[in-house]
Length: 339
Image (tube, rainbow, N blue to C red; front, side, top):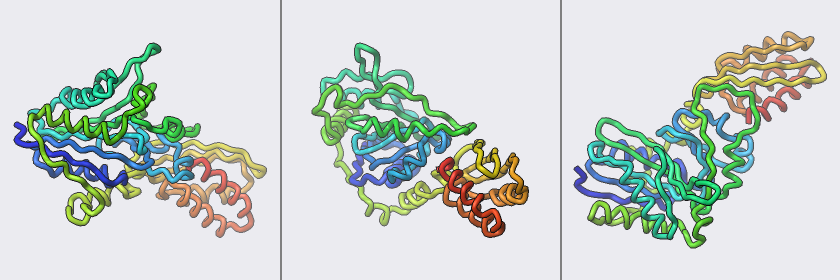
């Protein structure tokens, strides 16, 4: 039974804070309270719990453009967030949870803009056009024995060019056991009604939430200062921003790199798990077997990042000064493949 309701509104665009707030809602709030949380992120790629960032994202482009990578606790695919997205989160007790209710709250809010949105399948909200439906929202879900959690993103005026830039990775020979995102034809709500804004949409969602539960409550505004007052929230925040969570939780995958240099060909197979290189197999016709042996041993246990791999190769170059030029050339190439 839902005894009361609670509405939270984030005044920060920090993605780790906003995702940590979701965790706090899901793990620590009273499951008999129906919770609505509305928030936006600065430019961020958010991947699902079991996804591989090196497959889903153009990590090199993200680094160049200072785009944050976040990994959420729930499943589902990779999404790009910017201030043109409005994100919603519902939490209910498991016995009263009904995703159709949540979808109706969202679609009714959108219909207030005279946009005929409808829920489709398990995850999506669509709007029809003559040449086919357009996706304007996607959702993901999570539950425990006593509570259920439903969150999603609404495209209001997102930069869809960046969406494709960061979610369509460079061609890499990666083979992974992770979950790949399924791309869909997407549109912004402003394509259907230019007057849609984050503030007005949030107001409509809150009104529909109040109408459904036939009660109202004061809207609670959250900011970074909450981290200092709520210990669990701060703990979740520190965990979500940590490299080990964002990259180190990646499922097993193999990265195959191959190139030919003036001094010989290099064919590398890197077996990676939880963001760490576990095994390296190198095939080469180079006349310097000591380089191949040293690299194979040095890569073991190294974080799968351009910075860490670069440091390893620099270390081998110090040990083998007679071929340091070869190693510098190799390093400069490898970091472009890993970034």
